[in-house]
Amino acid sequence: MDKIPSLADLLPDFIARTGIHRTRTTDDLAEKWKDVAGEFAERTRYDILRRGVLEIIVSDTIYIQELTFRKRELLEKMRKAYPAAKFKDIRFRVGEVGE
Image 1 (tube, rainbow, N blue to C red):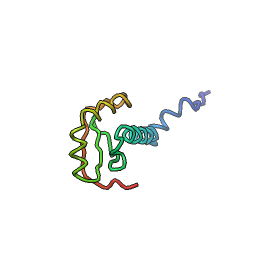
Image 2: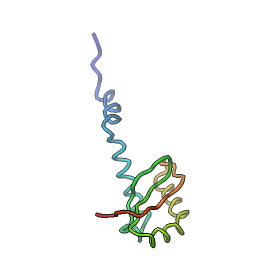
Image 3: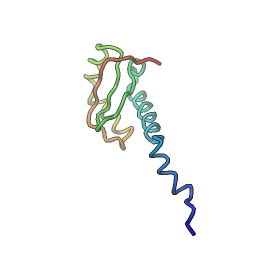
Image 4: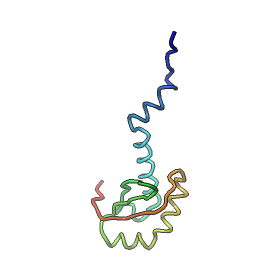
């Protein structure tokens, strides 16, 4: 007789197929960014983490300039807040921040 797989056997494959883990990670990174961004949180939003590069959308170029001055500090704070992500860099670009 074939063994009926347990939920513990099926769950990892289900999570991988549905992308639930990525969604959770995205939510976690967005929250970490808001904490780290501090006074800039309302003018920025997390976009994506790609190959270790954290991409942040910023409401306008004035804020990009200020964030660029603080880039090293922000990157270090993100590394401490979410070490599993292995951040290499942060890139800022102008876009819709929205609600």
